[in-house]
Image 1 (cartoon, helix red, strand yellow):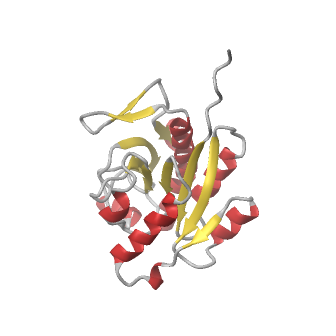
Image 2 (image 1 turned 90 degrees about the vertical axis):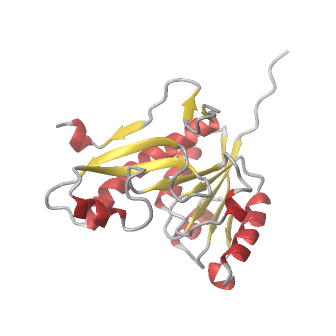
Image 3 (image 1 turned 120 degrees about the horizontal axis):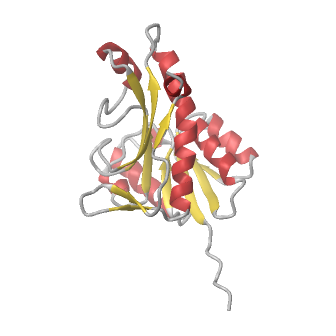
Length: 222
């Protein structure tokens, strides 16, 4: 008797603008029978990302934050909208809003973010400017599980890039973004294959060896 085929993992992706990380994930998911992009949701009207996702046949929705002056009220409605898609995981792909426990606590172990720094360094905003100002030699991005404490959830994977002498924030951001497009789809692959767990020490453990550090070619060649 053959084993029952497992249903694909369902992912809801939250975005703010063009959703370039979302696009990288959707493109990867097109090649996979075990990954379903259940919806792409934006908190802004007519975002380039939702337009692109709809063109790919992905369900989209908008829940405009400007319609909810109280943050907790917005998060309540966002929680209900996301839950309606019955996701296995919720991905924050450049979702530029701080989420309250009303939302975060509804998806324990299911909420994953990408942050443009090597956490725990440079939490919050303006990470590239701050990295340059502090004179660090490497910078990067981090994919992590989300907890109610901003940018402090268990780290899943990271990518590193060099900080060059003539970098400004835009140049550094572009270099980091290229690596984001590698590491976030890889993490989605791990999630789809049930390779990740968070242990009692609140650290991510892996069920088999996987790539957790992605290195920019300028570092690899040095």
